[in-house]
Structure formats: C-alpha cells, structure tokens
Length: 428
Length: 166
Ligand code: SF4
Image (tube, rainbow over all chains, first blue to last red):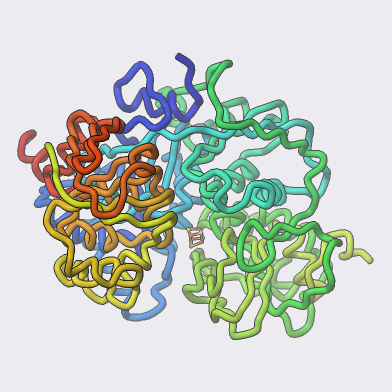
C-alpha cells in the first residue's frame, strides 16, 4: 500500500509498516518545543501528572522568544517559571536572550542543528510546521499535549491526507518564497488544506533555497494545513552539513520519499514563473493581491523579521535593497534579525550599518510586534507592511490597525516609498 | 465501553463560542463551565441533559478557538459522546485529550433525530438507535484512545503509563 512522505514518517515513528489517512496512531517524538507563552501552562499540567523528570533533556527545546527581553512583570514571571523548570531538569536546549544560540524558536531550532530529516516534532506553537522544510514531520499542538509529550516522549496523531503541490519552473528574479506561499494561500484559502499535509513536489523544488522552503512551510498553518513538507535533496543535505555537522556525520537522519503512487486528495500544479509579487491584505492571509493591481495604500510602519522572514538571507536581501535609500519621512522601519547568529552575521557583513543608515530601528531578537506583543505596536488606524505570517484583526496592536503581509522586497520598497510598493519603484 | 442516552441534535459548524461562551472563560472549573454549556443555542440544554446523553451535530463541530474549555464543558455536563460527520481539527485533539468520546459517522447523523435514544459501543464502533431500531457502524477507537478516554483524558493516561513503567 502506498504512502505519502508524511505518512511514511508517521508510520516509522509508530512502529507500523503502513498507516492510512484517518488512522489514529501513537508516535515517538524526536523533539518537543515550547515558548514563553505556552510553556508555563504546560508546566502546570506537567506537575499534575506527578512526573519526576522529562523523558529526555536533549529532546526538549524551550525558547523564551515572544515577550523577551521581558516586556513587563507578567512576562518576566512567565519567563522565570520557564527558566526554573529548564534549570531543574537541566534542559539542554534552553536559550537566554543574548546567548549565541538564542533567537526566535523557528529560526534557531534548524540553525542549532536540532531538526533533522525524518524527525517527528511537535511544538506548542502553531508555526512549528516550519521544520517540514528539512523533510521532518512537524506540527503545532496545545499546552496539554506539550506537557504530556515532555513526560513520555510520544503523542497521538490522526494520520493526515495530503495535497500534492507540484511545483514546476522557476521563480522570476525578485520573487521570493514568501510570494509563492501567499499566492498559494490566496488560491486555496485559509482552510484550503484543513487538517491535511501540504507536500511540495516537482522539478521546481530544486530551484528553491532552504530559506524559501522554511518560509513556505512556516505558513502551511495559514492554509489550515497540519504540516508542510519538502523532499530531502542536495540543498537539504548541504544545509545539514553547515548547521548540524555532528548529527549529519553520525547519520542521525532518515530520508523518506513519497511513493510514486501515493494517494493525494488533490494535486495542484503551480507554475513558479507565474507567481507575482504578492501582498496579503487585511485581515486574512488569503486576501492575496498582486503588486500593481490596487490603489495606493499609505503606511505607517514596516517590520522585517519574524520566524517567516528573519533569516540571514532575508537580511542580506533587505540590505541590498535598502542600500543608498532612506526610509520615508514619518514612517518607522523595524528590522529584527531572527537570531543571535543572524545578527552576528549581519554585523560581520556590514548589514546593520546599511539598516541604520537607511533610518531603521534594529531590534533585539524577539517575536515582539509579530504577535502584537511589544516593540512595534500599532495605534488605531495605522497600517503596517510586515514580513510576518498573520494579519488577523488586532494582530499587531489596535483592533482598528491593519497588517499587510509581504516578502522582503515589497517591505523594503514600501519603507522607502511610504506606501505599498514593489522593488521596481525603488529606482523610479 | 458502552454509553446510553438521549440525543440533543444540532446543526453544522457548532463553534466553541456556542459550546462555552467566552464570557465564562474566567473559570477553568468543569462544573461551572458545564452550567453554561450550549446556552447560546439551546438554553434548556443544561436543565435537560442527563448523564450519558449524547450530542449529535452537523459537520465541523467545535470550530473556532483552540480553548480546551469546550470539550471540558460538554463532558462535565454529563454528555458521554459527540457524534458528527466531522470535527474541527483542534477540537478533535482537545476532546480526546480531555477524555471526551467523539465519533465520526455521517450516516448516523442523518438518520438520528432530536430526542432519540441511542446505545453507543466504543469497542465495536456500533451506534444503535433504540428509537428507530437502526444500526450504524463508525470506526471504533484504537486501544490507546479508549484508554485515554477511560483515564479521563491525556493527563490521566500519561500518569498511569508513568506508574506502569516506574
Ligand atoms: S515570530 Fe510571530 S509567528 Fe513566529 S513564533 Fe514568533 S509570534 Fe509566532
């Protein structure tokens, strides 16, 4: 019986030869993740179970990234609870602001070499699906799930059906993975992949660098998907050699590939050459519009960062576009390198200088404004172009503020112009 | 494991705001949540529901927020099982984690009316409508899901499992 890539990974972790869509299984976990919002309630449940220890201190990752550097007393208390827990159980992958390994959870876990092909990963954070870029099965769960997973190192899943996104061709110059995923969500809607795996296949895959794959899988949840997943290829293996050299050398990964005749609920062919520069209008990621197809929208703020677009490739692209330009008078540009490692690299390459010269505020490694937490909140009536992943009502501040989702090129051009613009307008 | 009770029937897309309105989320106490369960679509539910009764509803039951309070409220009101053609993903997960039995069976939903008396066998997946004499087959739960439900939810299941291995 044939299986999709996701189904194969799940079957292997459930100790079964075969699983089929809809089946309920118990699977072993390779990594369990929590952040400063979801871990404190999970710690309470963890204590209720009477557990004496976590199942494996090397397989738990706790990242205080949402409200750090501590926003207020309440967030400080949350982080303190998490820190105490991490110390008590000697959690290896707990990072503190400023540490070389610190950053936004979905930026640092792959960078710190914790995500390997064939892994099953759950995280009490909906964007845990990011790790599918490396050929792992990863999905978001609740705090009770996190707590119980920390105790026993396994959890239950309902085996998902899959949609096959067959990518053909190549993205045009200046078009990024962010445009592609916004375009796809625009096509299928925010519930278009409800409960299903989004499996990316086809010749087009080889043209997408890892940074684009991470951005694409990051937003699988915005189409309702349970996970997004890319096949493992040369690009994946190169990434591992760089970021997970030890695990790579020890061969701590498994390459799963979908069967030729795997069953998909549907196959959607996407011609990469036809993907336009895309912006998602408020208040849903599915409100995708092509640059040039709408009237002028003036903006007050631009945010470049987050687990969607806070990697070094995003920073390099931003610096390249902003170099020699100034942020539009009266507009705030906030740049947030997604991890300490990304920030260090930005310093080395002189990118921070470019941002500061352009008139940007470069912020600490944090989720911050992405979830309307702190460090960039919008007032009523304000509009922001953000490289983040959600533009729900009130996501970045006041319920009457607006968030427009875009890739780095549109964010940079908009920051310089003061209204939503494509990079072509930069030199106009 | 079997359950017997009368049916409360509702339509499609019963959301978590209807199951337990947000204005009552200032408590996590199951009994207090149960006192307001379903009140926005059926104000008599709370006074009429008896232990063992079942909710039968249309597709996408439990859509909306991820609040674990929703299955907790239903379970604490005495409901033994929710039957629907489909459940929203997070509700599905939360229901099992909180120890509330749920079954997917489109044929049964179509042929069951409000007030019918049902007998549901979780081991075999058979739903028997005593009022009409009709029988339906749903997918039975695998062993570990039955154990989670018997243990009153995932926390109880994990605690038991821990005890057995220590
Ligand atoms: S950057 Fe935004 S989407 Fe990503 S983990 Fe942080 S809050 Fe969530």
